[in-house]
Image (cartoon, one colour):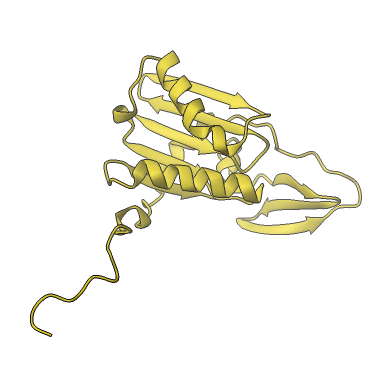
Amino acid sequence: MDLVVDCSRKGVNLGLYASDVSCEFSDLDAKGDELSSLLDKLLSENNFELSQIERVLVTLGPGSFTGIRAGIAFCEGLCFSGKRTLHGVSTLRALASHFPEGEEIILHARANLYYVLRDGHENLVKFETPPQTHENLPITPFANLIPQINPSRTQKANYLMNPYSAPEGPA
């Protein structure tokens, strides 16, 4: 089963996907610190166990700085043991999976600034007149990107190694 986590846009979006299963949770008012309880709720409401998740996809931004950090940290924690693979994808590229190739994807950044994916390039663009954005698209097609993205190697790092231990053998 695959887990998709998107905290880069407003709120929290979670999805669980397998060949015959698709269940999602979206809360525009939720914050990254609620991810654990929201995932537990999604799993229990659909009669799944955390151990069934094999691959995790997280959006890497652009978007909410705090949301991105919370989403990535949460997903790295889920994958730390190495029992799951961790995949990261640009939020704009993930949203582009809703449309035919070449479609322009726009997310609001601040004031008159917008994140734009155009011709495969991501930019911050100023618009005087607000354009139509893609803020509220569901995460359903994001899971289809997992096979196209190499897993992150950070989950295999040994963060628990004590760098201050004495060397072995005679001094």
